[in-house]
Length: 317
Length: 317
Image (cartoon, rainbow over all chains, first blue to last red; front, side, top):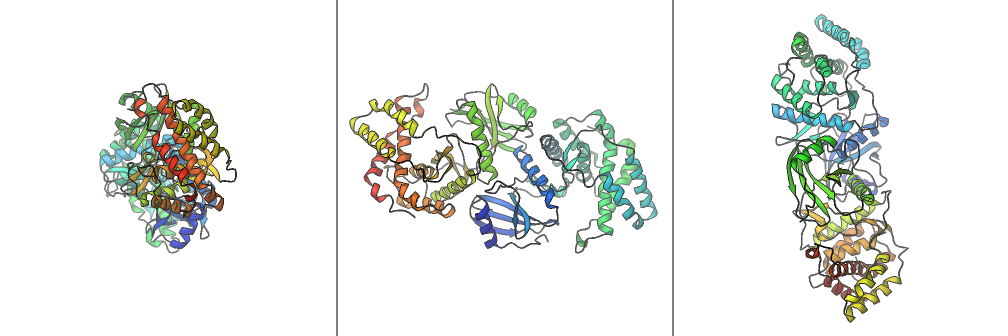
């Protein structure tokens, strides 16, 4: 459950009246998903909002994330739009925690995407990359190659020989590439199915930007394909991938260099999540064991990509 | 009709793709209301928007209005939210006209408001005043006392003796007051029934900020009461006025000085619209005769206020 810090209606009513022009509180409901922050649905006479109390993120990093969603929202990306205080700040404080309030999007996440869903996600991701190009702030990727190299030695002793060899070989393989010739900008970096909302069959929202950072755009597309276009058997679904890539390409045309780098990117995106899931599985934070996800899905996907590396450029748009 | 400049779907598709991250155009419909600008409903894969081509407003004034609605929207006021271009500008150009695209609000205007509707409008107006307090730009009121004094001599020769005496006396009466002790800030200045959208019985939008400027907040409230809380017989509806004032007061408490100035403000708001309607009626702009509204409603309302001046402070919240 994700209410770590309790907020009473009376506390919120006073807070809203003191700091916001959001009208009168009519409903307050804790949200039972999410593992990093405390979230509430807040309904006022002006509409429906989400209140977030930040429990773990570094306070200095919060302006990057909050200003980013404000930037993307004002470019027409359907992400939560932060609400400014009467003092004109997005970031505030409530019950001792950094807090902000954002618009509430319609829709719900889906678990079994079709090719059409994947096309909508690809189109949105390309527009998000274009809209992010004018965002002035920067954030290095906290889960980039430096983190891979620091994390691999910690999980290596927990792996069997086959997995250890796979991880060692993939780190070596990825170290051969620098990707300095690939287009870069703001990436979401975690655009899994649970971070897109559909209203019926129409994409209605993009949420959870707390892994957003500067990195290679194609890497973001690979992370997204790895979740949306992969089967339960941890294999690529070509039809869904082609739908997503075509829709992305129609908005931001992919270059020959990006096409050549695609198999490497799919593997890099797989490595990143295999590593973080291995780490979370073997080094669970206190009280969080139930959230640790199975790392083996990404191990199988990586083996699938290694085995089919030569084919991965062929099924392009 | 309000499409002065035609935009074809093909032109808009190219324009959107060149300048915005708004997805793919799926529908385009001219809007047949409004008399100052060309407006279209624009539907894309990201949602529903309104495209405005500015036909008459001074280009230099547009950033004030567009940045104002952006400011209010990010404070949770349900007004149209302008969409930024890839170059990060709200103001753009299309077919030779200054143009912008904004989010489309739900709801429709109502003609027969109840006390509950008036309360919602009062609450929203107070929050709009509070939210506007941190808006950094300024715009003098183009329909303030200087404009009254310049306009009255032009319409005076068209009036009968009774109306000329009423106008002369009201100008003299208003000139006795300076209102320097009343709270000021951004005002909407035209919050008539056609500029508020209700979704069912719930206030869902505030539109048309092209008369917004800096002036006395209580004057804005008086303009609003003059439309929402006045009968077809041009008399004040006390129940509706009290509902609006109470709701406003609950958000931004009105002072004893404001209470004292209330009858003067009601009359000032009436004078301003009587004058502009007289001017538009007697000096119609070419092709706009059909839009000229009857000035006599505000003449009757002014007589009603003059006759009941002493009572107007009594029916306060």
